[in-house]
Length: 359
Picture 1 (tube, rainbow, N blue to C red):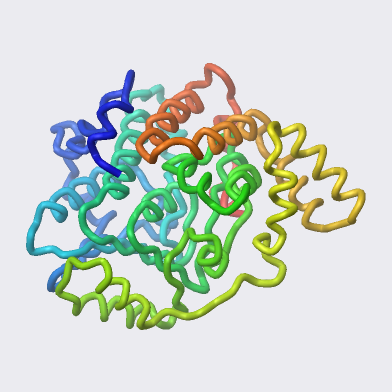
Picture 2: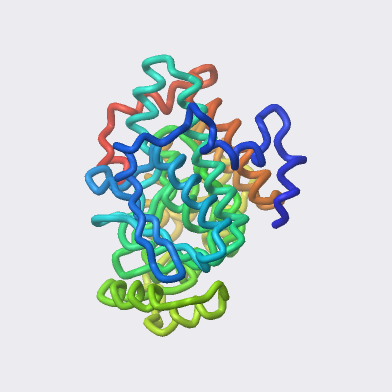
């Protein structure tokens, strides 16, 4: 994608080309005592950023987004750095955006700070999606929402047997954002609509099967992969890919995976409205007694009705838009979602724990 595309996409919002300079703005300077939230490992010819809020499952806040922007911009311009990697500390890669901090900002009436959070995060995602150097994301553990957003647009995505992917935003009264309407809409058939609306999880093998990940390795090989990458002196994507393949494992989706019922998914989730999707699922459930249909119906009925409608429309529009266009639209949608002008769904579910969000 050419970066010049961005100039025609931002209308009422400031341009993403300006966003890419966001981290250098005086009001967005990263405080030294917050630098530990994103650590850096220096290698011979590469750099690795480490999301480092393990107690919060590495959930992203504005500071982390600004620091990632600052680091990635400097690394992209450094001729002595050939490629870049991203990983998480603890049992998660990244559980998404820090919705608790967003809720606090909303309650305090700090609208501009909420806007800053989304601008910063979406700007980093655009930067990643247009990055000039190879990028490797090590998706070990929980990879949800914004966590997928800050990894999937990159060059290589390594899933493991511990990877858990999901976009569960409809279950918290929001919409799959952070570029989700772009990458979900490009999955096989109508799998993207299914994942966006139900918030169901995929494991590492399923991510490989549907194209969300590029490589798969058992967790015991991650250290070997990192050691191998550390020895590379290259900016050639094919060399990085060969290194990842050296410790790759061949896996297939479990026989119970949703990927083995794509025809049913397409039959149900290819329909035009949420009401039609639910009606067909109910017919299928009564006709077949299929536990999958029952479970899927339950998930849909647990979600915010408005979020379902908004999310379905978002995925459908994303199928015909570029990443930058999706991010612009999602930015506007996100601000509407937290504004309380249309719905309080996002606010009303904030008394739920983060653990429920991940369940």
